[in-house]
Amino acid sequence: MTAVTTGAMTLPLDVEPIRAQFPVLHQEVNGQPLAYLDNAATTQKPRAVIDAVSGFYERDCANVHRGVHALSARATEAYEAARGSVQRRLNARRPGEIVFVRGATEAINLVAWSFLRPRLQAGDEILVTEMEHHANIVPWQLLCQQIGAQLRVVPVTDSGELRLEALDGLLGDRTRLLALTHVSNALGTINPVAEIVARAHARGVPVLVDGAQALPHVAMDVQALDVDFYVFSGHKTYGPSGIGALYGKHEHLQAMPPWQGGGEMILSVTFDRTTFAAPPLRFEAGTPDMEGAIGLAAALEWLESVGLERAAAHERELLDHATRALRSVPGVRIIGTAAEKAAIISFTMEGAHPHDIGTILDHEGIAVRTGHHCAQPLMRRFGVPATARASFALYNTHAEVERLVEGLHQVRRVLGR
Amino acid sequence: MSDLRALYEEVILEHNRKPRNYMKRPEGANRSAYGFNPICGDEFTIHMTVEDGVVKDVGFEGAGCAISTASASMMTQAVMGKTEAEAEALFEAVRDLLTHDHPDPATAGRVGKLQVLTGVREFPMRVKCATLAWHTMHAAMHGVDGTVNTEEPEEHHQCAIGGGH
Ligand SMILES: Cc1ncc(COP(=O)(O)O)c(C=O)c1O
Figure (tube, each protein chain N blue to C red):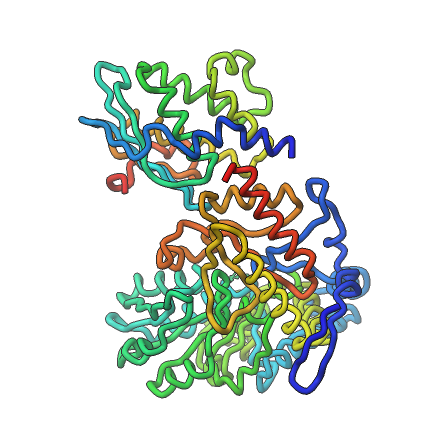
């Protein structure tokens, strides 16, 4: 039981009943109870999500938007209701601003090719930050190569915060888009998105925010933030993999050409010409991931039922605990010490390569991520080839933090340090 | 803890702490290759002086985990003074030992001390760590300034992509 204070309310988050809803957590790995601390890579799924997906298969499985029969009607209704769930989670103005995609990666590619490409010319610039995931670097790079545009980069400080004072200098007349992450997957930094969007808009620059790491942890209001595009993945927020969403402002989506052609996204087709459907269907060619969308909606609703604030407060306690505890382990260096952080801790350990840390912790039943976290430019910035990363979800416990610390002592023992 | 000890054999830990022929670029080195594992960021450059078909000297630089560092260190010791054909045979034997569940029984005899690396077989995720330096050595022997990466099919290992680094 953790007592937390969130605004006016004091609510305890009782972790055990929550853990009970996650079947996967109750197993042994290498003879030890599993401590799953790799949530930034993917989160585990609660029973509510598993049941929603299998329930779709058991009762409603049919293709959407096509049949007139009962199952197809039910499937369509559930799929569109799921769109509504995402709309509410992001506080978009209308469901039509939500496009279902495979995940954050596909959403970014969609914006790159459908929104930006038609308006990008040689010599133009796309602004990203030094802490982006490869998913928010490579699509822009590909575009730059095709068009002859240039990628420019907002640097980060030693503590892992964006150097906002550099932002205004980088937002130039030729900047066509600013793409940045809401929460860094490798540092945990929560970026001041509202302020950044305001500064970009003051220069007439649209903004895409990568919310892949934010959605499981922080509240989101696309209207209040006034972002142009917001993207995320279901699997990182207790939902299925292979599903995610793109939020785009209505006026942007309306103006964007389709990026993939096929069924479902059309109004009419002759061999001479095709008239495309309005957004969002225009961007959802082919049979969509129906069970994924339904599972995603179940995940968003489940998290809402737990209470995002309560979950975030619990994670903040885990983060504080883990930060303090890891600092007490000799040789540990935490990479990313921003004032505003999500429950993600990247670290290195003197004399122990992250991969050795990962293997030895795994032997203790503790799952952490090791490697460059698809953020190689950021690793270079901090002068490390890789880090070990512990990332927490609302079902993690203080006992697991203690096990992590004990595991790191074990790493020192095994490697003879 | 027992099988973990098989991976982190005392010999391996010792080589990791004090890698042999490390940060060494032999006088008159005439072969070198850069090998890297794009998944984990391990990278090594192997330099060799090969004269009259014999590995006269060899050294390595770079950084990696305990397994890859120790394997690189042991590799340099093992191929030092060997003929190219012998070094090549050793590469084949080590690879066989690490990547096959039932390596040729003769293999074990041929690799000698390198048998300590067999513990890695129980950790499939770590096999690439142990083989990286060997693939890189193999590439160095077959061409000057080759580049190897663990994620490419082996047939492509010898295509030199630019010059080393
Ligand atoms: C910040 C960030 N952006 C984008 C992605 C890509 O997400 P996906 O692979 O689900 O498309 C990730 C996943 O690691 C991420 O952490």
